[in-house]
Amino acid sequence: MSPREAIGRPGIVGRRRLRLPARAWWLRIGSVLVVLVVWQLTAPLVNPLFLRPPSAVVSAFVELSRDGTLPRAIFESLRNFLFGFAIALAAGLALGIAAARWRSFEHLTDPWVAALYSLPSVALVPFLSLWLGVGNAPKVAAIALFAVFPVLVNTQQGVRLVDPELLEVARSFCSSERRLWLHVLIPGALPMIFAGIRLAIPRALVGMIVAEFLISFGNGLGSLIIVYQNVFRVDRMFVPVIVVAVMGVIFIGAVQWLERRVAPWAHREQ
Image (tube, rainbow, N blue to C red; front, side):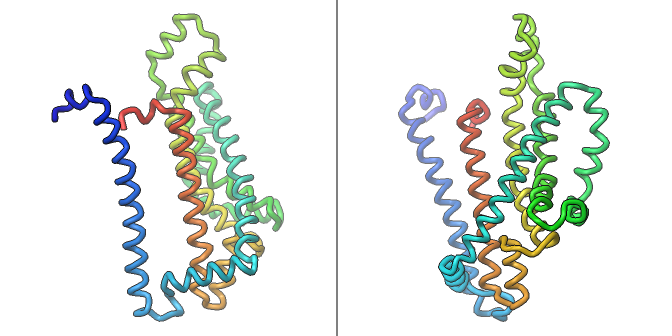
């Protein structure tokens, strides 16, 4: 059937669109199952001090959940993550929009953004501990530091890359500055902004774990990794690692879902 005939029969196109997501989900689930099977079969061939099978990790997950260790760690790490990411999101959006709007502000901040973005953020974590102490404040600051720059840079570029013809049309209708931003610039930059948020989520999770490694000993997921590393409980070490990976998948999926609702025009071609 030709593309023109398919367009003329919307029912067929709709069914194709429904089948494609199902196929994608099966491919994703299949890839996970293949890795788990290979892991389960190869783990007995390795020294148990270095690798344990998925069945042992599941048992460790159940044990840590029953005694409350894992829920407490998830709560502490997730709380710091949400606070730090909220700060990064607010700061990145504000600074990115300001840099795109005022050239003087861009020239003022560009050397610092380029230097700090190029510098490995982990090198600044000890300074945060020195300046803010050993509580949750430096951990929140570390998460914000890791996550702010993708949001900032993508927001700035997104505003800059808005179609100039749209701006000319808006100005020709004597649109005010506020309406120009609300109805043209911000909506046009949303795909890039959401891309920056998706890039910031893994960096924020890395910052969360690194902060718990370096700043202070607590009850978070990163602390669990260190604790069970010291006693060679590899099965329990895998539990917080997998939890962090699942958190990343959930948060990125939530952002993609929100993007489809807020900026559906970015997915029309797909």
